[in-house]
Image: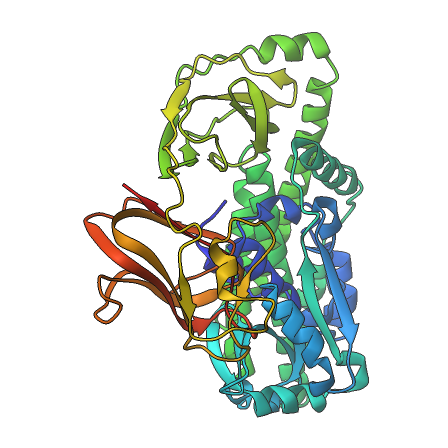
Length: 542
C-alpha cells in the first residue's frame, strides 16, 4: 500500500465525508486499494448528472468506498437535534478512541468561513472539557487542530435537520482475508464486463465548448460543469489503476494517462472560471485524445479479465504454473518487546494476481496478511520460537525455499511492585483505589478524579532497585505522561517521556542504569474525557 496518504486526495474526486474516513482507514493500515474495486464511473452517468443536470461531483452517487461491509466495517450514525444533546454519546465514543464525523455549516468554521455558505464534514478527534475545545481533523490538510467548543456547536446547530447526524466507523468486526479479496475481484470483473460505452460524453463536451454563448454566466456555468466531469474521470480512473495494481493485473498505462490528461484539462477549465482566455489550449484535441484512451482501456481490461478466467478454467495448466520456487524472501525479524516481534520480507511478484502470506509459529497458523510485514504479539516468554511464511496464490500454495527464522523471547521476571505501598494524587471513588494497581487481582483498577490532567501514582519499592522494565496497563489512558524515579521521594528524575500514549498495555523495556526506590507515573495530559485509570502498574528488576 502507498504510504503517501496525499496520493489519495490529489484528484479531489471523493466527497468530503468519504475523504474523511478514507484518512482513518489509511491511518489504521487497512489495505484500501482493494476497496477501489468499484471505482470506475461510467461516462454516461457523468454526462447525464454532471454535464446535462449540473450536479456537483460531491453529490454524485459514486460507489467508491461504499461497500466497507465486505471487510466488516460499518458506518454507524445517530441523529441529534443540537450539539449539546450529543455530548454523552460523543464523550463515550471519543473515550473509546473513535473518530467522529459530523456535518458542519461552513461559515461557522473559521478555516472555511471564506467559502460560500454550504455544508462540509469534519472529524472530531478529542474533547478537552477544561479548555472547552474540540480537536478536529479536516483532510487532507488539518489534523489535531484545536477548535473552540462554541464554533463546533454553531456549525452543527445551524444545519438543517437532515444533516444533524454524527457518524463513526465501527470496525470491531474488521477482517481481511484472501477469500474477501476473491469476492472483491469477482465483483469488479463481473461489473466491468457489463460496461458498454461509446463515450459520447467527450463528443458532447466538444460540441458544448464550441457553441457561442450569449452571456458570460452561461459560459462560466459550462466551464464549471466541465471541471466537475473531468475531476470524476481523473479520480475514478486513478483509483481503478490502484486496484488493478494491488490485485496484480498487468499495468494499464492508459489509466494513468487518462488521469493526467483529465486533470490537466480540469485545470484549464478552472482557469476559464476565473476569466482566463482558454481558446488556445487545444481543448477539442485533448477531449478526442481522452475518448481514444478510454476506448482502448475498456477493451484492454475486458481482454485481461477474459484471459484470466480462461487460464483459471484449466486446473492442470494452473497447477503446473503454480510450481514456482521462491529461493529467498529475505525474511527478517526485529524484537519490539520481550514477547513481540515484527517480520518483514520481500514482496512476492507473480503473474497470478491473488495471493496471501500465511504466518506459522511453531508450525501453527498464527495469521494471514496481504502485506509484506506482520507483527506477532503475546509470544511465550523465555522460549525459542520458529517462524515460517507460506505464500498462497489463486491456484494454491507456492513451494517455498525461503528462510525460516528462530527467535528467543525475553525473560519476564517477578513484578517487584507487587503488594508494595502506593500513594497517589487522588482517587476517583472509594472503589477505584490506589492499591488496585499492584494487588495482583485481575479486574481491579485505580482511577484519578475525572477532569484533571495533573495526576500521579507512585509505588514505594521499599529498597533501592535496579529497574529494567515498566508496564502500564491502562483502562483510561494518558496521552502525555512521564515515568519518574527517586531515592528519597523528594528529588525526581524522568526516565521515560511518552507524548503519544495510545492506551492498552504500554511497556518500556531495556531501561539502563536506573536505580531507585520510588517510581511514579506522572500524568500531564489525558487521552480521554475521564481521569487516568490503570489496571496494573508493574515494575521488573534486572
